[in-house]
Image (tube, rainbow, N blue to C red; front, top):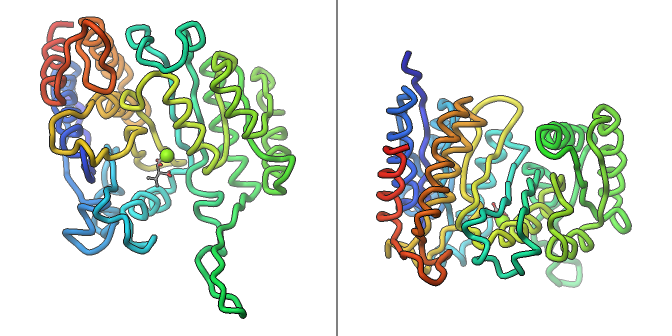
Length: 362
Ligand code: IPM
Ligand code: MG
């Protein structure tokens, strides 16, 4: 029987529309093979929404997302909107979407593909076999803590404030997701904090340790964030699953991504306790190459595969797409960001086309 799914597409800005078009084509092809029917609805977010509707997350975008089974997002932001006040910037749309759908758990895998080992800036022996999952808390911490803002003091000096805050329940729920993720992977979880300085991190460490009591099969360790950043580039293979707060996770997931050679290859999933998740590439909107057919659509395609696996419970279709991506790389096709000697360079559209041809043959 055909399964029907309602998917909200949020192309956003920059290279967003180009890469999401490839992912949609790929989903349609996979849908044929696995008897899945997708009903796609496009909605506005980020700079595109600011231009068309005067705000980065119009209410009907959030409604459309809530009514769908899953949300596929490309990327937001660009130079054009950089000087707007922070609550009107494209980024505010993304944060509003995360908060509005209560997507507290962000899964960011960083796995090195053997075909791309030479694209990493680190030595092959350091990155070979790297397979890390960063579980980032996404709706709390310093991104959302109050007070926040730029205030004027009694002496007429400006004072900028953000607050890093976590409650026990916020830590516990991300902790559970992280332990369960580690259980399905290598069984090791490293919690990253700054408990030598920050009280909020001391609470974080206590609660994660407590939650760990319920997962005796997972080996828990703790690192301070500065050390974790260093260890990630020194011996990344020591990590299996990492759990951390919003800000540290933002930073460490970019570093972990780059171990694999290109941030242009990495997908992510943002999940709540229930309701639709948001699936998006880890990379940004790359305004410098927007509209030039140079973008790498594979992180977006792999985000669609994550959507099939985690959001729609279609692991076979997800595997099929992932296998197609590997085969395309195996055949020597590359976009500019992952180009190396003797490979065939393709634009965004052409990469989509060879991927679809490949998917039709496997
Ligand atoms: C990310 C991005 C966002 C973040 C920005 C665009 C708001 O860097 O998803 O990692 O900081 O979370
Ligand atoms: Mg980031």
